[in-house]
Image 1: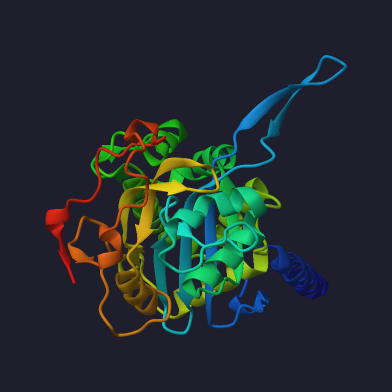
Image 2: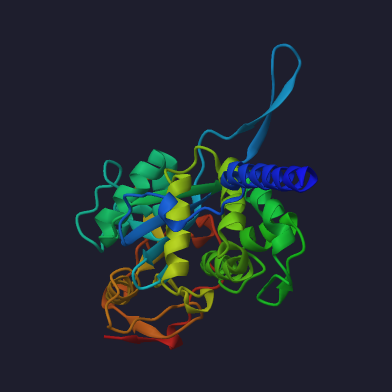
Length: 356
């Protein structure tokens, strides 16, 4: 009898110890819940994604040591806007070509929206005033509100890609395989290997983001893996964003909850017309991208403000109407075109357009 009582007591003690251990270790194993993450972004918002072309420099210190240092100023080679509607599970990506001419508050003095000779390239706005000025330019020229930004430079891009590479399977960009960070950087940065150089570089950035999202979405749908991936990427990006960890987890969890699928992600490149323009600011002729306002108005209405009005994606060379202001010459007739600093060999074919 005593042995039976002792056995029952021992069994009860072991059960209590097991319950205690399980109870006290559970917080370390508990998967994060959707309600754990708070953000003031709301349900509909726009995130600016910037590809900064600043490079890493090797600086020699007085004591002989060599340290890596990012160039203090860079240009926004890639300007993408992610429009997100969490309630509908919608994500749209819009690229703004870096050579598109715009008004830059405090720097240009164009008297009208077609006074292109007194405008400047949109990527210069980032060089002048970084994210703050670029955001103001997007609001001024396209009426696009920006709620958060994320900037990736050449070095951080390679680090992020290398970190995510184990989860990116059979990644190809327009039938070109991407096996490592160097290949990814080359294909996304190079202009000469593509038919429309800078335009295709912007298009490729959209395609690449969609491909990466398709590869990663399975992991991002799982709370623990999602948290680890986000922490790893944010550690690399550091201070080059005003997105918080909670912001990103809030976005991803609500997109999953509301049925977002990477295949539904829509993409568009703002439509423009390549042309040589004499920019008074630099007193020389440069290759620029003139905005085709009627088409851009439709694109922004559809991809940013979710209008049902149809709009072109311009991921390929779709035909578009050619407004009369694009038929003008924006450089002195006696100005030699060999002064143009960038490639003018592949402007959009006029046969693809219609005048009105």
